[in-house]
Length: 143
Ligand code: HEM
Image (cartoon, rainbow, N blue to C red; front, side, top):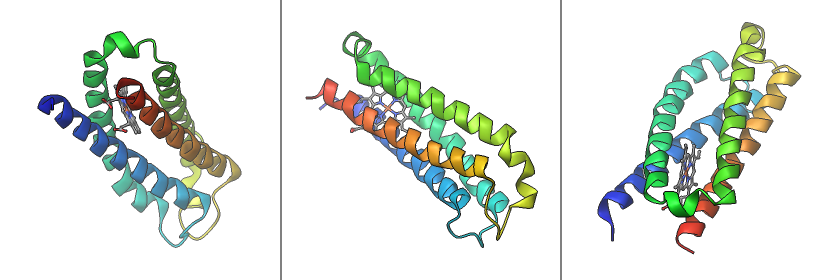
């Protein structure tokens, strides 16, 4: 067993589990589940978790990519995964600079506007796509 590589894969796993977990909880709230939880207060917890987790997932991902550069640069699954990560980041930027600027009006107890709900649903779909492609990348290295 390659211990350093296994440790980095462990850090990657911790990173993507925390990242997608926090994002899905936040997005489900935007979609209208548990409307009694104030969104701004929830974001004070989920946002720092997302920032720490993205550093862990991307940092460890780049290290593993480096170790398998020969095999992986040709992997279509990795290309799709990276494209989905970029799309998810752009969607988050749209949410933050668009619907989120009016959150005071829908912070608690009322449905979020359509643009916020559409962005939250897209976010869940994109991140689940990243997870699926991540698994395919791993299968490409260790069939
Ligand atoms: C620049 C960013 C990233 C790069 C370069 C990268 C690279 C990699 C590599 C090389 C592997 C295969 C490791 C192995 O099995 O030996 C992997 C696995 C995986 N990655 Fe990433 N990754 C990145 C970000 C992410 C993010 C943000 C997520 C999810 C939110 C994610 C989810 C996964 C998953 C689910 C696996 C499969 C783990 C397993 O089945 O053992 N990755 N990644």
